[in-house]
Length: 102
Image (cartoon, rainbow, N blue to C red; front, side):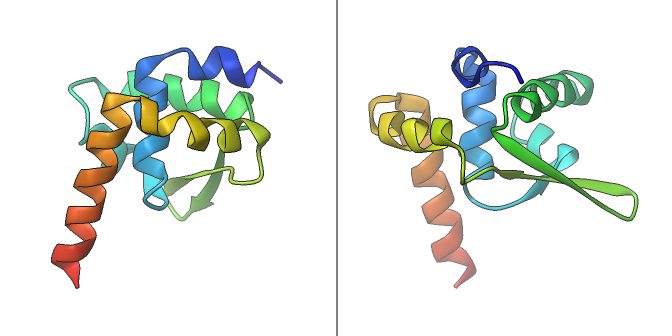
C-alpha cells in the first residue's frame, strides 16, 4: 500500500478527495471539475486507491469512486481541510449546490 501522506502531497489528489467528500462520483464527473484530461484523473485516482483513501465500485460500464471514510488519513485530512483554501472553496460550492437542489 502506498503512503497516504505521499498521496495527499499532491494538490489535484487533495481536490479530488474534496469533491468525493460530497458523495460518490464517476471519473467523468470528477474530470468535469478539473482542467485536466480524464486519463490524468484516472492516474490520480489510482494513487488514491493504492493509498487506501478511496474505494472503487463497478456499476455496469461505470466505476464509481468514493472516499474511504474509515481511513486514518481521511480523518487527518478532514482535520486539515479548514487550513486549505481550495478545500474551503470546494466545500462552500458543494454546500451551495446542495441548497439549490433542495
